Image (cartoon, rainbow, N blue to C red; front, side, top):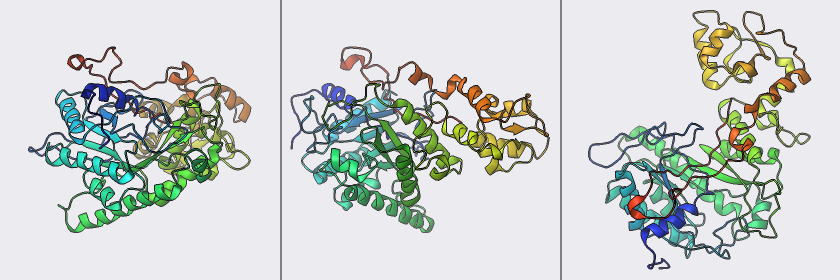
Length: 449
């Protein structure tokens, strides 16, 4: 068993929390499990313990790798077998101890557990399953658990883990099979998609079983997600979003996460990025992803072979609206819910409020502001009782110039180059007696209206 015995638990924790920082597929929403008076912890659908940062990031998961040892040589991964980095591995008991002790101290409310490949996929998946089994059945932990399934592992192990986890995810790694072949030759799209399909089928079968037997054990009740690295290979935004659309349609994924490529290995097969990680591109992909999932857009409406990449100066919804001014302005008091979703500055919740509120009154611009509509974007595309908010022109260059003056089109943390993931050990020297109440932040950039 290739697990270090000469490191303290806190030394391992320092290595394996840092090693997990590039895995962004870490989300806690989608499952609701109340405390049962017997086990420790609970899980709330809106987030593990209602704990989200102002930018939407969940901040209450202990996010670690089981091991950063790996038998594979993926060019983009800092933990590949040829990387000269400190190595560490937990035991199942150590992960349980950390989770329970951090939970008792109110540092975290759940666990995100990923891993490198130690010895073999089956060997690693067995260790992960043992960890989940002990947490649920010995330590009686009832909180949220998100675990990475290991491609190539025995389907029986993945199934057993699925009955203990709330969410499972399998990283697609790169958008296309060609990119995977180039940078991760020991991995294949088939070995990744096979367990993804297994989890999808298991979720569907379990839902049918729960209809007949309400007390049947739940299988991955919060669904599955995946992650793609953006910028390591030359795919366009159009290709990337087509892959995401197919994953949502064919595998019923809850989320696709996009991770801006960071060249940590300086491998000759990797692209040089003089401007640093493509964070703005990542942000635009998240915004477009939001449009697919909540706003009834399709990829073909947003991009095409002739326009394969998103406008870096405008969010995808504003960019689409500018290219389709023939649909505007729309009358707020008569437009359908689907039409309202297409208006920049109107989110899906605001659209619902508009439809509900106008049943009893004629809405004005003042009402829209109270409802939550972002009028500095919407005012160019809407009327209230046939009148626009100001005397504006429905002309592409005029509207574009004004929208580009809105600094919120580019996120503040990207403008100021302040993007990074917090660590449990940000406050300084590692000391078990003075672990700060910091939290691991999942680097998910949320989409604006």
